[in-house]
Amino acid sequence: MNKIIKILALGLLSVMAVGCVTQKKMTYLRDADAVKADSINARYTAQTELTIRPGDALTVFVTALDKEAVTPYNLPTVVFNAPGSTQVQTTPMLQYYIVDDEGDIQMPVLGKVHVGGLKRTEAETHIKSLLEAQVVNPMVQVGLLNAYVSVLGEVNQPGRVPITSGHLTVLEAIAASGDLTVYGQRHDVLVSREVDGKMQFARLDLHSADIYTSPYFYLQQNDVIYVSPNKVRAVSSANAGLWLSMVSTVASAATVIVTVVNVSQKKNTTSSDGN
Image (cartoon, rainbow, N blue to C red; front, top):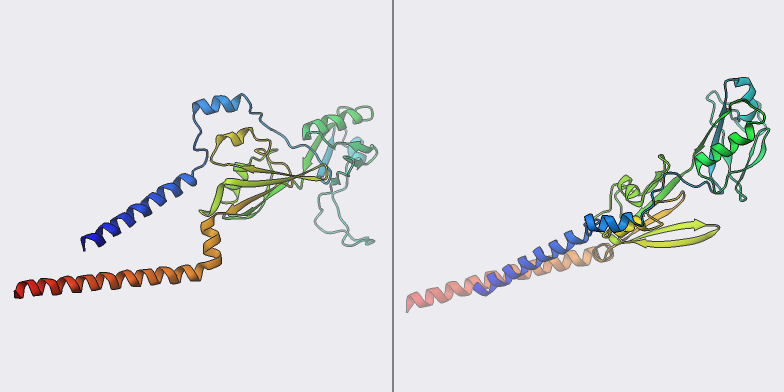
């Protein structure tokens, strides 16, 4: 019986050891400290705005003290019910510009305006400079409508995450997706990105504070984050029934062994008392 107790104790210690390893694997930025921060800050560059790219949907509002003077430069906020229809919807809808493959938009009166490769504030300054020859003290506001990233895989709430504040980090995107599940591989998070019509890929280790210096730490519009499952998830998904059956069999066998040992010990005790 003592041997069985020792075996069970060793098994319990093994489970506890596995639990400690699992907890360590689930910890983010576990090497972050003051020394690491100094090293990171020497290479870290904060990003405050997205860069306008082909395919982006932009809103451009032009205002001035003379409101009538800027009316021709703004798109109307209405939309027809159907192509060719003369009826408009009762609720006006926001109109926007699509940045073409050359990085241009077609604005009323101004015509073709190049905004590709510019930050939002840079685009505002550029459009304002074009207007100043025609409008007194114009003000320009540019907004991105379709800036988002997609988060897939082992997160609690997969889906699209909008970029609403001008920038979004990989940690913020994961937080907005409800964090990784316990099955997500934190050392191997894939980020895919399209640049000039070609795909780029990077794998980030969330255990390390070095992700702050990665060019993929700040996400760009249309980036895709994929969190792959660990081996536990793979095994449980593919062979859940088999593993449950094995656990049940092992538990039953352990119960039988303990029962047989107890009966044997009782017989030995009775025989000893009889002698």
